[in-house]
Length: 436
Ligand code: NAP
Image (cartoon, rainbow, N blue to C red; front, side, top):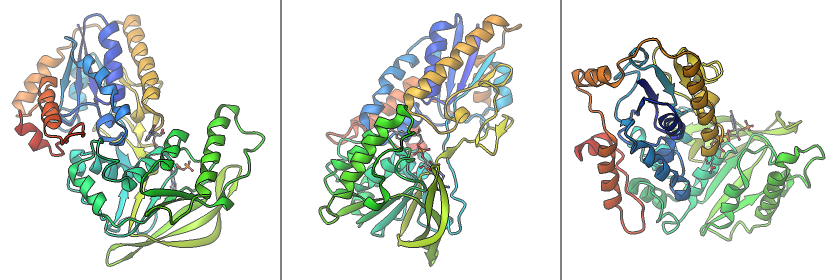
């Protein structure tokens, strides 16, 4: 028997479990998650109005039905069970804990009330227990969002959709009513580089043409006439489509809808200004673009905003005893191997880049590597795996949640949702455990 522990039940963990459970003879796979709920960012990172993307869980569900795969939720590796204990008891450990900590802007005023990281903010509206008490300040009419990636677009969209447009999403009831009640009239989406360097994708950008109460705007002076001659042909079509869409936004009437989304390029945040401890404005510095890199010009502009959300990427959490690269905010590894018998995949390995299918191909290659390594040097002695860990969990009075128990939570969420809404999430762990 080969005992495998996977830490983190997001897409990377699920894809590795899928392949190992099918291809590794005599494998027993335990997938740990610190939450009682599986699926990581599919549940609490993917935007609540992108339900199509969340359909992937139907595929993941089937993995957990296999006899040699176990979900062990509500167990925090590093706190409840140590990294060392996992290594002692499993032949193979795979770390797939994603990247959930917000990168900091590192500018003065970042500590003011009204400044949030995108992970924090999206976790709040997605019902992640870590942010159940966030209650963000959405009392003002203007919000700045820093970053030009898809996460920045997700948050802008969720903040500007109507109640009807969010009806079939799984946003929490608290977040939905707070956003609906917010007097938002202007959202500034601020990129430090130009439109051709933005990392958002065209499908997501185009969604802003369809919104009922939000008009997207761009400054024509910030849009190049055409792509440079030396544009990489692999991305030229995507960039050209973005340029067409941004020109369409530049021609929009700012007064046509009650919420304006201003796409601002070539501006870096310099400092957040406060009054009585809360955000009053943000000072931006204009950049010029030199070979696609932002070069500060010394010219500044102050935007009156009452909320600021930085959507500039994520770091991974550390686990005590696990080698970690503090500068990159990722797990330390050599070709996916952290140390003998311990592997890593996904965002905690590569940093927060790529969509779910890119994590699939990464996870597949790591699973293949694990199988090849086991074939090349089979483990000498059998480790006890779940037997010892189950006993440890009992002795420590821990409350592991099985996949069957998750199904009880899942059905309760589905059953209590109003008509048209896929689920009404429980965002507090005690409320989930009370159902079991
Ligand atoms: P991202 O695509 O890497 O975007 C981060 C943005 O933050 C970039 O525009 C970056 O600018 C900017 N930035 C970084 N540091 C900054 C600083 N100090 N000051 C100002 N701006 C700064 O990351 P993300 O939006 O968090 O998305 C993470 C991954 O998830 C991406 O691969 C994304 O495509 C994926 N995702 C996909 C979807 C979808 O498919 N619908 C939805 C959400 C997320 P520079 O480019 O200049 O560094």
